[in-house]
Structure formats: structure tokens, C-alpha cells
Image (cartoon, rainbow, N blue to C red):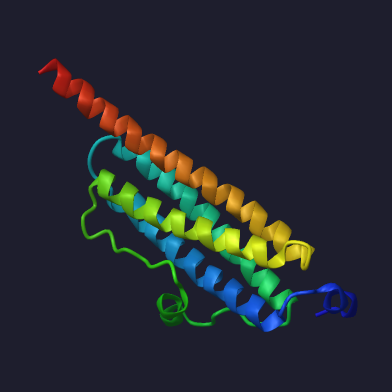
Length: 169
């Protein structure tokens, strides 16, 4: 870590590295959950939801890359083994055992809400103490909030479609 970066860092570096590694592991799990869900999804609006999942997967992978870079900049090491991701992550991976679109949307909403909480905490931890990590976490938080909104919109659209169809009967 550069001399001035160390000097202006006003947060416990070990604590920060730990929370960044938690987020890093969670991003990899989120990537895989979206990536696999995009391929397995069945049900209403499958193609649109699968495309959204694929887009989210790419963004989660990008988040993991940014977190890895920041961990290294701070003098740490990202979680080295995929086997360690589930043990490190606090937001858990849910296997798409039921690939129905609405189930996948619910699983991913749960994961997004956990991620939102994680990045909010990182923002609170670093605000006014580590400007670089704060900016990174605030940017990722913004994207996670967008993901939640997009997933909710699909869920609402599917529900509205079924309600409309039931009213016709």
C-alpha cells in the first residue's frame, strides 16, 4: 500500500479487508447464481428474465474484480479458493433447484437485499475515512439497488399478468 494511502486511511485495515473479502466472496456467488439462473430459467417471461440475469451476472463479476483490486491495493489478498467463498460469504448462495422464473426472482431478490445491506455497511464504515473504498462501495451499492428494482419489476409484471388472466376467467 502506498505511503500516503496508508497515512490517510482512517479505518482499521484488517477489519476493512475482512469485510471486503466477504463482499468479494458474495459477488462470486451472486455471479454464479445469476449465470446459472439465466440458463435454467423456465416459465413466464423466461427470455426477458434470463437476459436480465445474464446482465446482472456480468455486473456481479465486474464487482468482484473491483473488490479484488481494492483488496490488493490495501495490501490484502482476495479469497484465493472458490471452496472458501461459501464459508466467507454472509449472503448465501441458493442453488436454482426449482428453476421456475418466480422462484429464481425471489432467490435473487434475497441475495440483492443482502448485498445492499453489505454495501451500506461498507459505506458507513468508510465514509470520511477511506474515500476510495467509500466511492467503490457506493457505486456498487447503487448498482445493487438497481438490480433489486429491476427484479421487483419483473416479479410485479408476472403477477399482474396472472391477475389479469384470472380476471378474464
